[in-house]
Length: 395
Image (cartoon, rainbow, N blue to C red):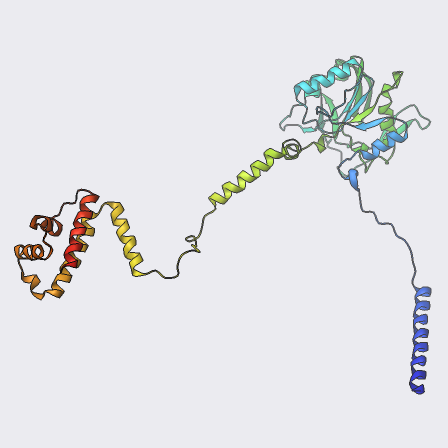
């Protein structure tokens, strides 16, 4: 026993040394480090492409807020506010567009872009740009390459004399109806122009300002920190600084507008549930059934009497009284031949007399039950069957 205990202790010591050696090797050879993995945009940034721009303006002291236009939750725009609509404004009909222009005319600042059109293709209407006589088109010069992507140098009053802003080179602002800058109906405050291409302008509209940009890609989350895009946006938000109390910089995301299904689920969910139940019920009724329905209460085997009874009920419902009566007469004739073999050779008169002697019934009544081919109604049928049954019992 002492030898076994010594062996066990020795094995424990060896095992401890092995584990300690493995730990020491791991500690000296395995390097522990933390690596950051970019998982892309998370949360609201997945759907709000201008969330970084909002945070930047807030950090600069500019009150900024996302707004939903023409909804129950919409806040009233004040004349010292700025509204930035980066989308193509597909949800703005003529009346809503006129309402926005009236707000600008009173002193508001509207920043918009537009959907570019290609020369020769269908020209879609833009309610605001049509009123202003402006448009945005896709334009490529013959000596240009699509691979060129260089920022524009915007002349501003800074120590560097310019800002670099990366517009989409081939989306440009143009004057409709062959108008030129000098013939434009509104006062142009500044214009971004490069190589005969206009990428933006700001005009005076009534008491307010309207800024039109050929595109707003530079203000998205992915590009706001490139070049001087953030500074350019901050300068646009400061147009209303002339007011003693500058308002809020609102921006509206029409690309995030609520679908009809989502609106119905939020505002009319009982109707949606009822419609779903109704649709399921209609589909259930229209689904074809393959084969007869299984009757779990049906007996495994039917007796011959059951088939005979079902056949009789069918003929009774169809009014085939004479057919049923003939079956009873044939059965009576067969019974009479079994008991009286000479029965088949008897005349009609002798048969009637024989039955009259057996039953003491009138011959006319027996003749009507045996040979009458007219059954007027159910009571007549029942009367004849009773007489035939009495004849059978008296054989």
